Image (cartoon, rainbow over all chains, first blue to last red; front, side, top):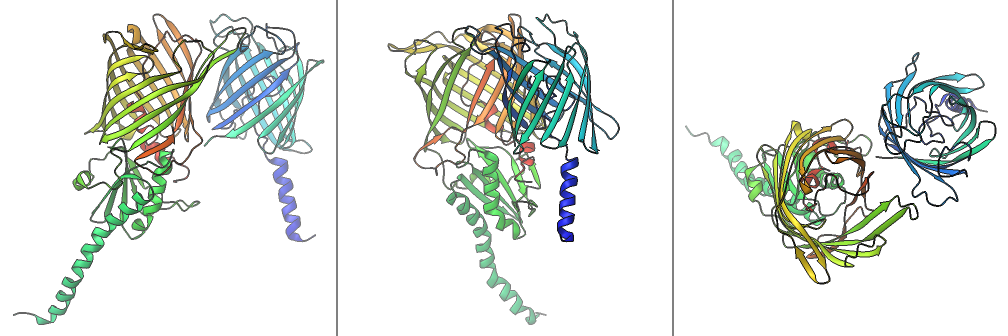
Length: 233
Length: 397
C-alpha cells in the first residue's frame, strides 16, 4: 500500500473517529436522547420532521391506551434557539381530533467549551391541556475521541414545576440524565434515566439527513421512528 | 505666440470626442438593452461620471434577490470596465434600495458581489427619474394565480376540515406606483360549509404607492378587501438605520361586504381601524420582531407581537396577541411556490404567485386581532429586498 493511500486511510479513520455526531430528536421530538432533552440544539437553519411510534404504556396521552404516533417538526430557529411542534395521536382511537398539540421552546444559555458543558433551558407544552408540560435546565458535555467509544456525551438535567400554569401532568421533574456513545458518527447508543425510569436506545443516521431511532422504554416498551433533517437556506 | 506643435494633438483630441460621446451614450444604452432583453421591466440607465446607475423592475424571478443577482451578472462587464455600477430595483415603480458594485466577485461562485447596499436612494442622478423606460410594464396585464387554503382543526370527529381553491388575480400597473387589481376566489373543495358561492369576487382595489424623502413609504388603497370588507386604507412606514428599524401606521375605514347569488351587499362604511407598529430587524439573523397595537376590526383594542425569520425565500415565525377579550397565538408561514422563474413580460401574461402565506391560530375562531388584507401592503413591498437581507445573500457574497 502506498504512502499516499495509507495517509488517506489514516486521515479518514481519524475523521470518522472524532467527527461529532449531529444532534437528533428524541421520541418527544425535541433534541435529546431517548426521551430526555439535552443541552444540544438543532443546527441553526435546520428543519427536522418525523414520526415516532410510542409504546402505549409510555405516551401519556389521555385519549387511549394504544400505541401513539408522535409527529413532530423541530426547527433550529436561531443558533441558540430551538422551536418544536408536536402532535400526539393514539392509533385506532376515534374522537381525538388532531390529537394533543404541543409547542416547545429551548434556549441555549451557554455554549460548550473545551472544559465547560453546554447549558440550555427549555419549556414544553405551555398552552392548552399541558399534558406534557415541562420546564427544565440541562447540561451536556461531549468528550472525543474516547478510545473504543468514539464520542461520548454526558447529559444531566433538572426539571420542576416552575410556572404558575395549571398542567394536567409534568415531565422531567427532578434530576434526569443520560449517556450517549457514538463509536461512529452514524451510530449512537443511548441510555438515560428520565426522572421516572430507565430507557435505552439506538440511533442511526443515514445519508446525513435521515435518522432512525429504536428505543426500549422502561423494560418493556418498544418505541421508535424516523426523522428527516433538511437545511434551510 | 501660437504653438503650432500642439495642433495635431488638439486635432486628434477633437476627432476622438464624438467617439467618446458615443461610448458614453452606449454604456447606458447597452445596460438598458441587456436587462430589457433578459425580461426585466421598466429599465432605465444613466451614466454619471464613472458611475452607471440602472433602475429596473424584476418581472422574471420569484426571488427578488435572484433578480438582483441576475441583473448584476448581466451588467458585470460594465463594472469590469472600471466603472461603479449601482442597481436600483423597483417594485410598483417605487425604488427600493441601491446596490453598489465595484468589481468584487464572490470567491466561490464568481458572481458579482455588492460592496454596499443602502435604503437611501437620495443621491441618484436626477436624470434617472425622467429617463425613458425600456420594456415599460404600464398597461400590461398579469394574471397571477394564488393557491387558497383555509382549514379548521380540532373537531373530534373530523380533525381537519378545509376549503381549497385558487384565486386568480388580474393585476395592471397603470403608472408609477398606481396599480389596479381584481381577484376572484374559485372554490374547488369546501368542507367548511360556508354557503358561499363557488366563484366570487375578492380583492378589487386601486392602489397608489409612493416613496417620499427620508425613506418614508406611503400607500393608499380603495376597494374591496379580504375577508369581506370594503372601504379605504392608508398606510405609512418610515425606515431608519438602513432598514433595521421601522415605524408605521395604518388607518382604515371599512364596512362589511359579501357576495352571494343575488349579488353584492354592503353595510355602511363606518368601522375605523387604527394601528401603529414598530419593528426591528436583526442584520445577522434575518429575524424581524414587530409590535403592532391599536384598534383592530370590531373596535377591539389590543396588541400583537410577531417574530419571524427569513430562511431565504421561506419565512417561519410565530405571533401572540392580547386584548381585553382574550389572547391568542400561532404560527406564520410564507412558503415559496415551485415556480422560480416567470414567463417573459407580455401584454397579457399568466403566472403563479410568488409565495403562499399562511397563519395558524391556536384558538381557531378569529375573534382577536382581526385585520383585513388589501393585497398592496407596504410589508409586501420590500420585505425581500431589505439591505441586510441582500447583503446576507449566500449566493451574492
